[in-house]
Amino acid sequence: MDNLNYYQKEPEGQLLDRKRAVIHPREVARHLSAFANAEGGTLVIGIEDDGEITGFKYPKAKIIENYLEAPFDFLNSLPKYDTERLEIKNSSGENDEVLLFYVEPSYDSIISLKDESVFLRINDKSKKLTYPQITQLEYDRGSRKFEEELVEYSSIEDVNEELVEEFRQLLNTTVSTEKLLKARGFLRDGKLTVTGLLLFSNNIPAYFPSARIRFMRYEGTREETGARLNVVKDVTFDQALPTAIREAAAFIRTQLRDFTFLGKDGRFVTLPEYPEFAWFEGMINAIIHRRYDNQGDHIRIKMFDDRLEIYSPGALPASVTLENIKEERYSRNPKLAAALTQYKWVRESNEGVGRIFKEMNDYFLEDPVYEEPNGSAVQLTLKNNIVARKDRETGRVSEIITPELFEELNEQEEAIVRYLYNSGRLTTKETAELIDRSENTARKWINKLLKKNIVVAHGSGKNDPKRFYTLKDN
Image (cartoon, helix red, strand yellow):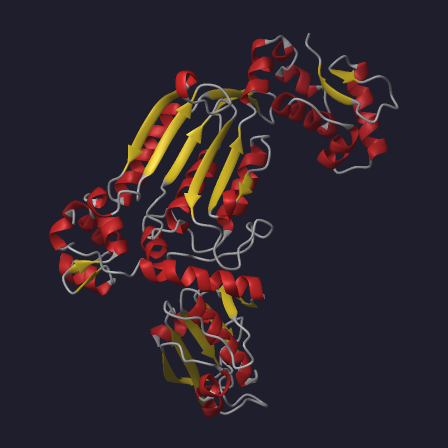
């Protein structure tokens, strides 16, 4: 009954879905396809979305056998799965059953329906893929299987016991190293898998020289070469991923500059030039989504005066595109992602990318930019706006922005002043969006700030379409 309680109360998501026993068996096949093409999962039939147990005695419920036959009736090929029939009492107090499908991820092939449609589990939905997305999923099959491959000539002797002990504590278990690695699929036939090596061995360079993180800091805003080479820091992190992640993060923190930020109370706060969540999440995403079978490239983090670039080998996976990257979720290396979840570095939901956008906005920075250079990599760019901020800090603008000033401003005026200090400039249209009012109302508040001698207008006149506003340099 412990399992039943879990399947009732656990939120539906990437690895779990609940359905009433009235759905068409074809729908069951779609969910099985979706789970198999992603990270696997459990489909529960007979429990409602809200956890109510309606079972198979519910009005118009189909018989269990219809669902047991669904994979054979509607799928082109069968994924690996098990079924379980749990005897329960339904919400009406009757003796009843619920049916569970435990689906394993399909690394070797795509699981499609007999009508050739393909589904993929993304968060709490089983989504039908388009033809280009199916093609991309086929391309990703090689990478997803690669993390399961055995590393020739490796052995348990390559394992760092301290790293395994840390992982053992995270799992709250006391099993031996060998049993733990085998149980988690990191060791087979006496050899480490690619994921096992990446997680627990400091001998990575001997097997995968490109499985490293390289940080480079440049002086200026461009990458120069030859006599004008402007690299001032060049550090490589190539140990086991838990170690490399910690060391890279600690080093990056030492390279970040500070800027003065104007808070909501009208007081200045000193913060690093990028939100930590944004660059750290960007680095983690690069690590868990890169193509490790691409042995000719490595993760690169480049810091310029005005931006931070995080580059990861391998195009966006499966159904993820530049347009839907904030909402879609697909794990190219699910074993690796699942392991790093134990360290609290990876989130099972897709809130990570969306939160990068939010954190940047909270810092009054531009939205992050995702690109696919040459269609063979993913690059995240974070712009810091530090040059403009330094101008305001070293100028006399800061002399007029005081807590006393804020006491004289209403909510709309305060929002405008804070934005101008932290981001530099605003048009009337942008001001309207900022305060969620019409352009006429926005213009009214700007005019009040102009009269208070806080804001300055730039342009040839009131009708200039390029007219914008900044804080006055006192």
